[in-house]
Length: 209
Image (cartoon, rainbow, N blue to C red; front, side):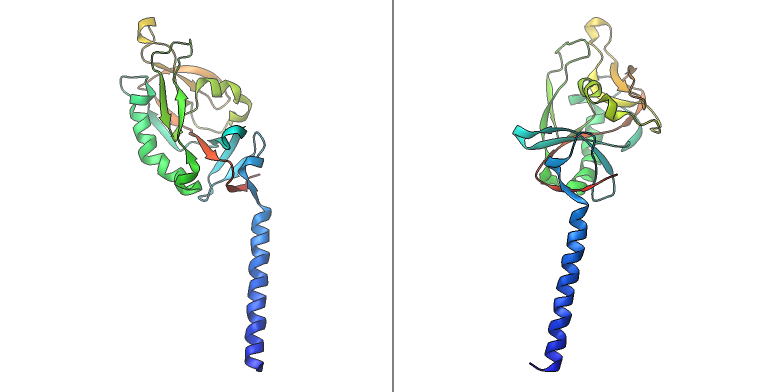
């Protein structure tokens, strides 16, 4: 083998070794999402931080919520508390869904059914299928300790109506404060958007702090 060929071979081997080393270092900060513990922070490709809320092992899915708002001062709707028909749903699917698809890949975000039962257990609104949506009232209670983030600038929407028009609450929805307090607000108020999504749990993600 000529000296030039020998030098080229050594340079190629060195490049391969360096690439492997870099890949190993990258993997050190990566986990398969199914191994994320409750409360584990993960990072999307954009640098956006998410919190793992729950593993759904049978479905091979992981429920996560964005750590911060993805929109502020957003009206739920002018005249309905039905998330399925709301302007908020339209905005989330138009503006927010593409952003989270860039973070994880469109195929890794699972469309799922969300129950729109009211806080007082009225089932007038049925269910709704979503890929990205606000937290529900039940989730706000179940994961309350994980949702507290006192530097959030405002309360944020759930997709759960407070009650129904027939009961005198046709314009109110459950909302959550930065301290985890659950209250109600009129649908035409301005609140933050902190979305929830279901991800395939076999994907690899970057670990947050």
